[in-house]
Image 1: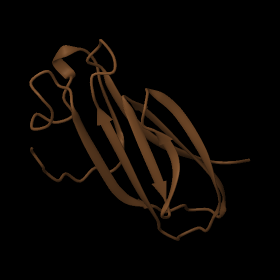
Image 2: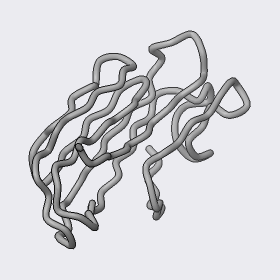
Image 3: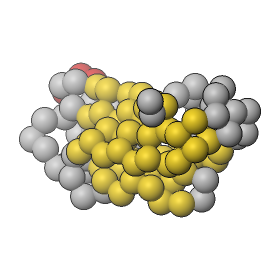
Length: 120
């Protein structure tokens, strides 16, 4: 089992096809499958208003916001959103994203993307 730590400014990764199948060369098996990742960090809004978080994941992912599991998309590739309520400007809210790449699809493509938007 390999383990390593990287610092990423955002959770937004997409690879297409056989040559781009690895998130990092030191994870997964020789086919670019069967690995998992975890990102931890904070969301700090600049305005006080309601927010929605969206997680796009294949083969699967989960999102915890402020200690609560708000998106569970572990079993199949999908896009899910969750309204997390009124956030306070300047406050740091802890987030945790977990992702796994199994052998769900015949393709070697994978995608993990976390986004957020304020509600009108």
